[in-house]
Length: 36
Image (tube, rainbow, N blue to C red):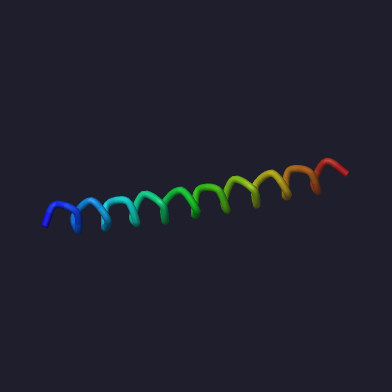
C-alpha cells in the first residue's frame, strides 16, 4: 500500500544522503590534506 511506496522513497533519500555525506567528508579530507 501507500506505506511501501513511502518506505522505498525514504530508503532512496537515505541512500542519497549517505552518498552525499560520504562525498562531502571525502572532499573535506582532500582539501585539508592539500593545504599542508
